[in-house]
Image 1: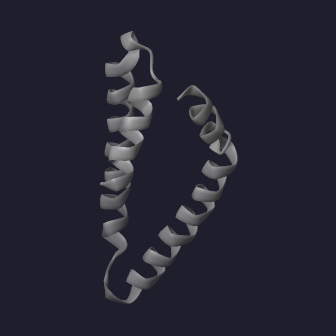
Image 2: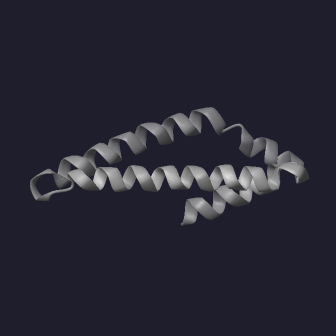
Image 3: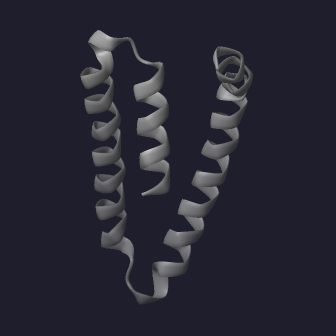
Length: 83
């Protein structure tokens, strides 16, 4: 919930006026994709394997968070200069 609100706010504030609804729809579609991945991974969440599923999700999330930070950390200074 927290990342969804923050992501929507950032996307909505940075989009041109004519693309705000399209960008919001694309952002919500990515939320749908994440929920579908969670539902698919839920199939393998039986009792002995649940630790492996959560460990794999944690490792993947950590790697993706590092990649995301590496790709987009310069936006903090760009947004600060816009305000």
